[in-house]
Image (cartoon, rainbow, N blue to C red; front, top):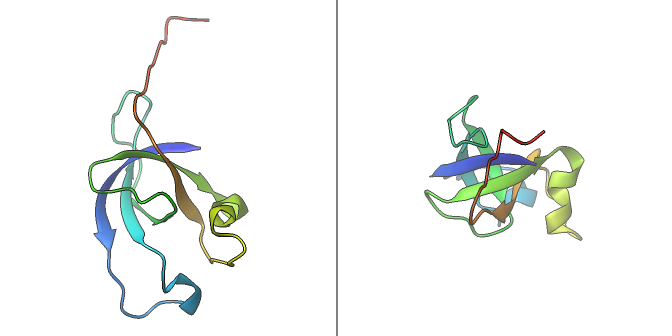
Length: 92
């Protein structure tokens, strides 16, 4: 699972027919402390996340599982909306 913040939405008039009903969101990956890291990503949305929300997503084949029995051609999917993150780096 990966942590990030939704920063926008992608609109596409021409796409794979299997993506016709899927929302595509733009996500900025974050460290556990909330610092932006890496490039922005386009991900499908299985949770109904909105702009500014903290989310986590899965990658690879597992990212298509939330849409079963439909076969959605996706590499990354938002699978949760995060309420709170607690980071304690002092614990071994």
